[in-house]
Amino acid sequence: MRIDILSAVPSLMQSFFEHSILQRAKDKGILEIHLHNIRDYATNKHKQIDDYQFGGGAGMVMMIEPILACIEMLQQQRSYDEIIYMTPDGALLEQKTVNTLSLKENLIILCGHYKGIDERLREHIVTKELSIGSYVLSGGELPAAVLVDAIGRLIPGVLGDETSALTDSFQDKLLAPPVYTRPADYKGWKIPDILLSGNDKLIEEWRYEQSVERTRKRRPDLLEND
Ligand code: SAH
Image (cartoon, rainbow, N blue to C red):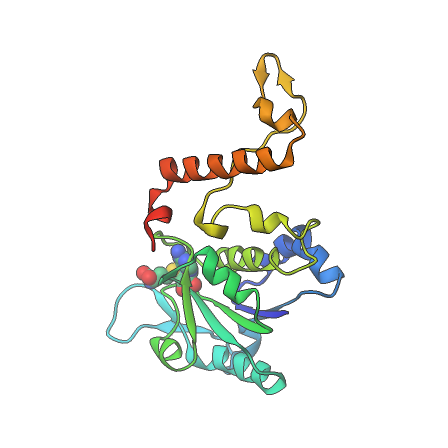
């Protein structure tokens, strides 16, 4: 899989991608992440990528030309499954969207800044708009990193154990069960006996019950949906 990220400050994401689990994916050649500085595609001599908004008002708007120049350069080289714009008014990012995106070949992710990007790019170029939550950040870089991390860990070969991602929260519409590690008794804080029973079938049943119980208590909305 290949992901191209367009940003006005790509260095914000660099260290994250180099030090996260995604580096392993890159080393193994399973995932390519390319960061593009939108400023490199600015067409005027001041390297301008934003301008005042029509109609007046505070805040700059990211211009069409530099973003489109970068996207068109990429599209000349390969076709893209989605051009995603990270934006607080997009669809709320959910695990099922992440699952779907993890099966794609080539993705472009566009990070906004200031007041956001010119609306005409959203109308004519962007194919998907995603929000990471109902709050406003100053740029799309953290949201893009969140999305890429969520996608990357689902690609086979990225996590050490292939099945690990499948037992995490939100797969199967359930939260994950509680987990414990050594010591089995920490100053009187004991782990549930069942986990020491060695009976895989009973342990699996216990985990399932815990998942359902936890979901009912903390996120009943997950059980209600269809
Ligand atoms: N004026 C916009 C906010 C712009 S914030 C509005 O009120 O909706 C600047 C940029 O940060 C956005 O273009 C977007 O790329 C990013 N951003 C901010 N909050 C975000 C969120 N919750 N999810 C995804 N992207 C977000």
